[in-house]
Length: 136
Image 1 (tube, helix red, strand yellow):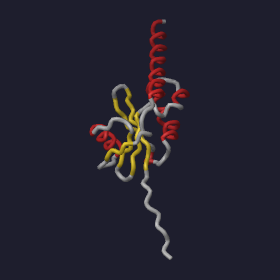
Image 2 (cartoon, rainbow, N blue to C red; image 1 turned 90 degrees about the horizontal axis):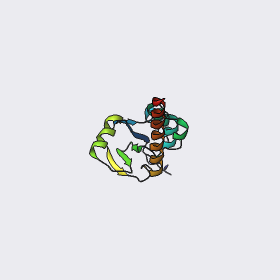
Image 3 (cartoon, one colour; image 1 turned 30 degrees about the horizontal axis):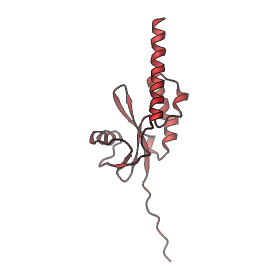
């Protein structure tokens, strides 16, 4: 009796596309590890944003949907839930070294409006604090 074959399951890894004061930065796990977005967010991305924008880390930890995100597949797909463009696909391809990427729509890979608003509130709060300390 023949042993059934298990189909190759494509490897995937999460990415975030960050807007750092007009500079677009694509970040992904070391060795393109196949981990959940939430783990990558909590262990890496939230800290990066907290340091870059000088905002507290703790409120960021629960906002993994406040930044653009996607999942890249070993089958050449970039799963993304927002407006897709050739320019963004080239940016992702260049950053990850993945060639011949194609878009695949996935509504799960989209920002959530409440999370975006909360992130903006954290930035505004920091700017307000900066303005107050500058006037003292």
